[in-house]
Each structure stands twice: as C-alpha cells, then as structure tokens.
Image 1: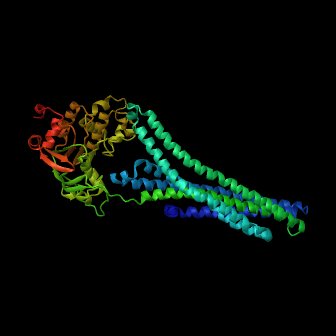
Image 2 (image 1 turned 45 degrees about the vertical axis):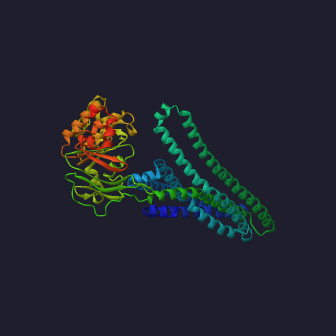
Image 3 (image 1 turned 120 degrees about the vertical axis):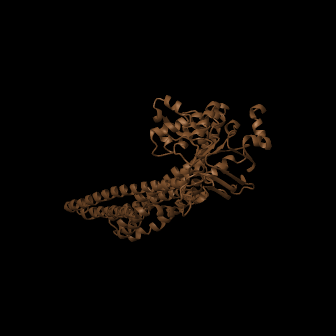
Length: 577
C-alpha cells in the first residue's frame, strides 16, 4: 500500500526523480572510484617513490571528489523538493477528501485521528521519500559496485562477504520484524493523546467549574505514559540496531586485516589493494546500514500510508449528482416526503416517515423533546446527511439532483453550535457571500441585532475573531452566525435552535426584523423555547422521530398533548393562551 500511494503521487515528478537517480548514480560511482585511485597511489606511487604519479593521480582524485560533491548537492536539492511536493500533495488530497465527508464519515473517524492523519502520518511518508532520494537510491548502487570492485582487488578475500552480509541481514531483519507492530501502536497512541488534549482544551471551563483539574491531568498523564512506553520499546530496539551493525563492521574489519595481512606476507596481495578492499568493505557495510535505516522507517511509513489510504478510499455517503440539474432555485418551496434516516447498523431509525412542507413567505417551526430528531431533520435539507428513505425536494426537485454549489447558495444554515473562524468579523461574514460589500455586512448585522455591539468594538468589522469565536459571548456568536447566513440572501433559512443564547428582548427584536426583511423566503426554525416559535405559521411536533402533530399554536394547544406539555413546562396557562 505504501508503494502504491507513493507511486501514484510521485507520478507528476518523474522527470525530477530521473535527475535525482542520475546524480546519485554519478556521485556513487565517483565515491567507489576513489579507493581504487588511492590504491594506485600507494602501490604505484608511494611504494616506488614516483612523486609525479602521486601528483597526477591526486589531481584526478581531486576532480572526482569535486564531481562527487556537486552531484551529491544536486541530488539532495532535487530530492528534497520532490519529497516536499509529495507531502504537500498528500496533505491536499487528504484535506480535499475530508471536505467531501458528510457528518456520518466525520463521526466514523473522529476529528483527532483526521488531524493526525493529515499532519503526522503524511510527514512520516514524506520523510521516507526524502530519505529514499538522499540515501536509499545510492545504497544498492554502492553495495553492488563495492562488491564488484572488492572482487577486482582480491577474490579469495572477498569470500568473507558471503558470511558478513548475511549475518548483518539476519540481525537487522529480526529487529525490524519486532518494530512494525510497535509503530502501528505508536500512531494509535498519538490519536488517543490528541483526542484527550482536544477535549481538555475545548472543555476547560467545564473542567474548572467541576474542579476536575486533577482528574483530567491524570487522564492526560496516563495517555502520555502509554505513548512513552511504546516509544521507549521502539527506542530500545533502535538502540540495539546500531551497536549490532557496528559490532559486525568492526569484527569484519579485524578479520579482513588478519587474513589480508597473511596474503600480503605471502606476496599474493599488495598493501594498496588491502587498503582499497577495506574501503570497499566499509562502503558495502555503510550501504547496508543506510538500507537498514530506511527499512527501519518503512514499517512506520507503511502504517501511516494505510491510515492515509483509509481516508482517501472512504467514499462520502452524500454523493454529488453525476448530471446535476441546471434549473435555478427561484422560490424555495421545501417538501419532505416519507423521509427516514437511520445510522449504519442502528436497530431503530432516528427519523421515520416524516412528511411535511414549508412554503415561501411562511415560518415553519419544529419542536419536540430532546432526542426526537429535530437537528437531524434540519441537517437533511442542506445534505449534511442523506435520507435513507424518502425524498427532500426544493421547488419540486430532489436535492440529490442539485449541484452542491446550487444547494449551498439556496440554503442558509445557522447550526445549533455556531462556529466562527479565525480572522475578522468581515472575513466570517464573507463565508456567506464572498463579494459582500460593507453596506451589505452592516445591513445583515442590523437584521441579526449585532450591529450595536460590532459598532462599539474598536476595529468594527475588522475586529479579530479567535478560533471558534471564543473571544465573543455566546449570544454575540449566535448573532454573527445569523448575520453570516442572512448576507447571502438564500431562498431557505434554517435556524437550528439559533436563538437559545439570546435574551427575550433580543430574541423578539430579531424575529421581528426577520419577518420584515425575508418576507419571500422559506424559514424553518428548530427551537426549544416556545416564545420563539408560538407565532410561526405552522408548527411541527416531533416525537420519537415521527411527526405527531402539525398546526398553529392555538390548534396544537387544543389538539396535541405533547405540544401542550412542552408549552406548559415553560409558560403558565394564561401566558400560553
């Protein structure tokens, strides 16, 4: 899987890879040629006292060295650029795939692991590619070339390689075989640590409110210790690897010097040849070490590649239409026919046989007890989920046949938990309309009852907003989110309990402004507060995922026991009447 992933995303950089391979080939040949020249200097120059030969051969060595350095620098430059491009493309691919996910896929993976896969996992694959271009390409060339040139120096002495290389391979193979499962466990532990850290940062107010600082600290320490223990086990194996390699290298060098000395003493071998043979032995073993270092990285990169591929191969349950309808949405008439929604593997559906309609110029409210499916029903309209049965239609067209951009332009959603992005107030408003003017922004803020507090801010529309909108109050955050939905002038407005953080006066003023400004749009409101919805044209009562009653406030008070219980739990009988 690692090979397939890297091959697919390196395909656009084939020319750069060819250049890297050629440069590495030339610089490796130059490295291999230097010991032969050194042997010639010893045997033909130093032993014979030929100073001219030493100077001429030394000049050749200098030229070869310069060539080696230039090729090595060029190989590292092009290899690094290609590896960084691979990382960039992989991050872009994972991010792009995540952007297509519906809420179902987000729930399947979870935010912490998606963050880890986009950053840490991609970084591991990128690092493997970098090491491959800078080290691994030259390792087999150096190993094969070193063996060939060692044989050229002395064939009987080269028989020692038949023992040295297999012993080294067996030792490294045993160590690496135990490292792979530890690398997989390491990535899982990183996911877990990210999840706990994210929860603690997001829920710091709750932690302090319930004085659970010590408990959360213990949770974090436990997760951190688990990651530490796995990393320690991996580190022990890595620490064992290099001493093992060096032991083989040093024992081999002693053995070569011993047997080589005897061959020199017998006249079967020259001193320069033994020096060159030792150099080639070091180069062969160094190439094996480089390959070992790479192989050591491969198991973790394989695990990361599997996790990346898992994201890339996960198809969204909300599939865009192959041939989207080109008919524009002009009115915004909304209709749900026999809609059902069931989570994968669930015994009972969240929504069952829901049929309702919402017409332009009217306000349709949805109310029900906690867990009745109100938010899920609202999320079906902008296709955050797809219904498992039935159909959702806008102006008579099934939303599955609409282009995502057309559906997004027609529907303005204010979610239950309004989220603001890092930037300014103006930046956040432009999420609703990219080319919005300042006049349009102030008008949207005025309707959302947010103009007053924005005007009081020192920088007005250019006031910075922290991630998630944590530097403004809950009510201000809700009003800014409402203004963001209003600025695009969609045909359908969906308010998912979007007035819960507002005081009654602001709530009433906002609803009055909405009724005055968006008279020709379809408005759907999900709310728990009865005062927010009692004046709606139609109120839908959900219970257990089913529509149990429908009508205006007076009709439902007289005919729906469920609705009257909800109302009387908030208002007195006189207020309800």
